[in-house]
Every structure is written in C-alpha cells, then in structure tokens.
Length: 521
Image (cartoon, rainbow, N blue to C red):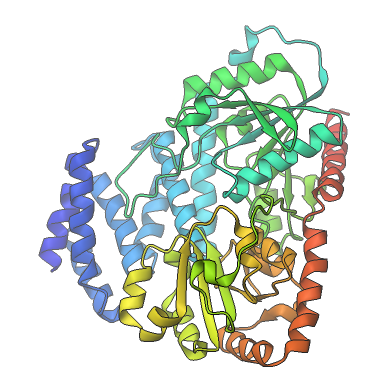
C-alpha cells in the first residue's frame, strides 16, 4: 500500500495545471486512502511515516503529502512543518500562500477535530504574509496616485464580501441584510461587491482534498439587486481572484468613489486590506465564535475575545479599542408554505429531531451517529435537511439510521420544514448559527454542546457537555410535553433577539463610526 500511495503522491507535481489528470489522480488517491479506513491510528501513522521517509525534495509533492497525511491521520505534524517553511519562502507565490491558508482554514472550520491553536496561529501568519506580499504588488499609493478622487460621499458605504451565492447561504444573507439596514434605516447608499476571493482558483496548488468555493456566474450580469424592496448596487468579480490587476482596479474605483465607510463581511480579503490603507475598513465576522483573518484596522466579532485572541489581534496591529463586540443577528428567507408531515413521508406521531447544514458529510461524525442510534425508534426519529453526501453509506451500515433518519436534502422553504419538527440538534461544529436561529423562530428548541456559533445563541440551559447528555435531554423532552412547551416558548423569544438586525447592526455601525473618527483625529 505504501509504495502505491507514494507513486500516486509523487505524480501530483508532474500534472499541476492538467485538470483532467488531477481529477484522475484525486480519484486514485481517494480509492487507495479508503483502504486505510479500518486501520488503527498507529497503523495509519506507520504508513504515513514510511511514505514520508521516501519522499524526495519536490515542493508540490511535499505540500500534497502534508495535506494528505493531515486528513488521513488527523495529526498535523507534517503540515505544521510545511507551513512553517512556506510562510517566508520565496519558492511559492503570494497567491499560493493565500490559497494554502484558505484551504487549511476551511478544513479546520469543516472538521473541528483538525483544529489546534498552534495550527490556527500558523495559518493566520501564512495568510497575513500572503496579504502583505499581495499589497506590496498592488502598491496602493501608486495605484491611486493617478486617479482623481471625488469629494467625500458621506452617504455611500461599500460592502465587500468574498462569496455571494443565494438566500440558502448564511453569509450571503448577512451581506444583503446589512446592506438593507444601512439603506432602509440609516440613510446610506450601499454598493455591494463580491470580490470572489473565497477558495477561488488563483494560486491553485495540489492539496488533498481540493476545496473549491461555490461561485454563481449569473451574478456577473447583475448591476442591481432588489432585496426586501431596496435596490442595492452590485458588482461581482470573476473567480480568478485574488489577483493584482483586478484588485488594483477595485481599489482605484473605491478611492474615486470616496465612500464614508467600507465594510468587509467575513474578512480575509486582499481588496479590503488594500482599501484599509486609505480608508479604515471594518471586518464583520460571519463566524461569531471565532475571529476572522485580522487584515484591517477595525474588527467586529460576536464574543468577547479570549486572551489568546487578544494577543493575536494585538500582534497584527488591531488596537483594543477597535475590537467591537456585537450581537450577530440573522435574517431568514420568508416562509412560503404550510406543510404537513405526510407531504414528506414523515411519521405523524413521532418526536422529530432535525439536523441542518451544508457540510453534514463532515459534521455528522461517527460519534454523532452512535448517539442517534441510541435514541432512534418508532417514537423518536430524525430529519436531515441540507447536504449529506454520505447519507446512503451511513444508511447502509446502520439499520436504525436507514429506518428512522429521513433525508430531505436542500429545501427552499426551510422555515416550513422546521415547523414540522420538535427539536434541533447541533453536532459538534463551529457553524450552524443561522439555521439554529431559524429553528427557534418556529418554536423548535435547540440542543448543542458549548462550542461554536450555536452555543453563543442559546441560553445555558440548552447547552450540554457531550453527546451522552444530549441523548438524556432528548429522552426527557420527548417524554415531558410541558417541559418541551416551556423550551419552545423560550426559543421563540430568543429568536426575536437574534433577528433584530436593525437594532443590533446599527449599534455596531455607530461604534465603527466612532473608531473611524478616532483614527481621523
């Protein structure tokens, strides 16, 4: 097995840029890797170490191996070593550094078992170096030097987002919601720009597995979006971002427009970092339980920073007074239907659990499936709403899962589905905040561990220490209708707080304005 894997890994660098060959190799690697699934961690590490000892010095091969070994063993020693070597290396471009940081960051978000504070710190440093090198090439002073700047437009706000998809996508809804509030209630005119910098193809390198960000080409033809009656000016970049030429053009445009404010939804943007050189730019976190890549002067997060986060922000030049803690609020796609359970073949009398997400393939772990297996029956069943590519595989391995877990896939009217359910379960993960808030708005209470975005939204009562305690609460709520009704009412009340974007976001905007005024003095 080692020799076959070594041969495949060494071929990676040879086909860089040949997409057909890369896909073929990816499939072969995945097939060979699948043979390791039943092995113990010690056996996996033995295979990985044997291959490592035989690798040559080819850079892209070593990078691929570092990613592959990380995913296979969930041990990051080879990846840590590789990232340390690449941070200040001139052997790869700034775009490749950006690409690698983006890929690692996504994998850590997708699978919390892969996260460690040490790796997170290195990834922030790698991304910061990529942005630094990119900014040097954009050369903001020279880029804007030949462009005449208009008079200050105190009514204009630029919103930058790195990905813009549909109303099923939380960060897209966040960007539109913030734009709507600024125009409808704060007297501003918003220009929303999708910089398309999230997991694009720029700087593509051989990693395992490749995580390509979703991109909607039809937005390229759109110059204005109507959202809840507000017409919002819009522009979308092509998927080859970040690159110097288009970044420079956007920076020149924003300089010429001379807006009152620039907001970066999500962080991690070269465009935002460049604009920040002449206009203090605020990063608005979309993952309230974490902090974004700190590339601008002002940052808004959904929780009080930990001591480690405070040190990170300080190290990257963000002053304590420019760290804004604000409530993260959500907006929902309006409910359009009234369903009954039989419309989806769901049992009429069962206590229905619901698990929601676009990354459930990774987030529904073996441990979570084992917890479900211990509670599922004719009386307690489960709905999956979202994307779970391995649903059939799980159903084939587990009789209870096959019989009592109903996969509804993606649903356009999520609120209508929640109304059919009784209890929202949050797997151990970082995301899920918007779907949990949607669930609570329909009176469906939430159970979550004390980790991630969902834990920030719910009361302490609804947090559990582990899956064993989650299982106990499922049984208790299913058996005690009065207790469930109490939780249901509390969920609705909490959802009202979590959807009051007008109140909470305007608070944040006023704090951002104060930070900008202070910097101008």
